[in-house]
Image 1 (cartoon, rainbow, N blue to C red):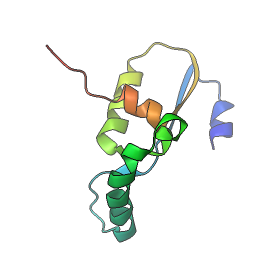
Image 2 (cartoon, rainbow, N blue to C red):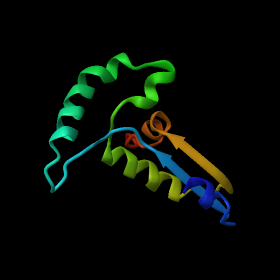
Image 3 (spheres, helix red, strand yellow):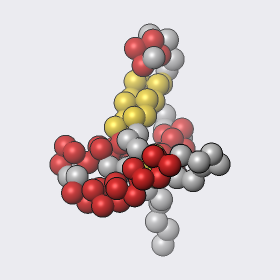
Image 4 (cartoon, one colour):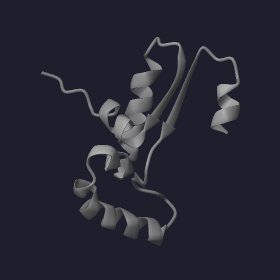
Length: 94
């Protein structure tokens, strides 16, 4: 899908590759809940090149998408989970 999307002549394309999404869902997903619980323990152990495998809050992904929607960059941009984490942090006011 990414390959086909990159072939479309849009001015800007943002591709997001989040790892395991951490958030509430209406449907029951037992394995996902267990995975998120395990990742809460494992996340701090993932550093360097492994940071992109940390679970990520759905709100963080949404914030990153919103932040990028205001950007005026042309081109194709691919964001791994650790990059999404950096972009999607709430802006501190003060």
